[in-house]
Length: 240
Image 1: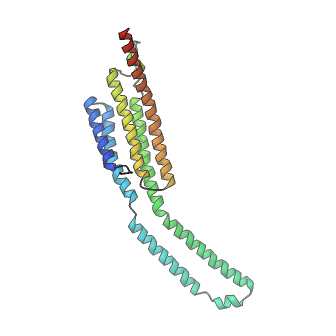
Image 2 (image 1 turned 45 degrees about the vertical axis):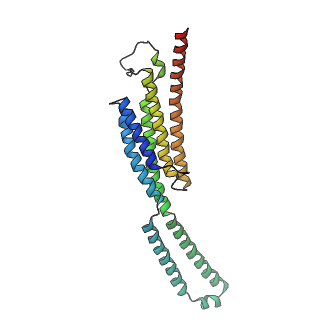
Image 3 (image 1 turned 30 degrees about the horizontal axis):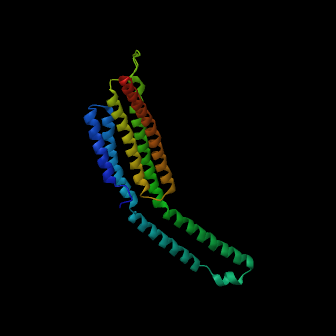
């Protein structure tokens, strides 16, 4: 049994969702958002796979630098007249040892910087991609923002600035469900990055995107619940 997300399955699910939206609401802006999200999903799948692969050229370059740095340290130490240092006063010995320790610490700091360079490069790429997914979540939320379920039964007069509300109860429910599904899939795209790296900063950013999608989706499901309650009230009124 697989324990990881399949990027191709996530992309396929988004493609199906795009088709459903286009068939149900042809010409709607939400369909255009879904199309853009499908393209982003394909790119995200490829980027996530790339993040999981090691940068072999960078690692080979780092190895060469480490070997070269170690060679320089060995050469520098070989140029020191240790007999003279050991025969000298304790102060000279202390200064000599201090120089060796400082050189080794500098080398260790350089090695650590190079060893973490790959992780920091990947982190920068992932955070940039996660920012794009976060923006998509807010765009989807904007599309459902004016979809107020209480207007289904409202007979109040509209104003010149009132948004057009021409959907039936069924259409509005489906529209809101599409938005909720899209937000859930955006969270899954973010999770693809979390499966490819143990970087705690990246995992924190992934969790932030998932929490955002969950929070926005919860508001949508509250609207769907209101629509369901209104439908039950109508059914009971008709029976009465």
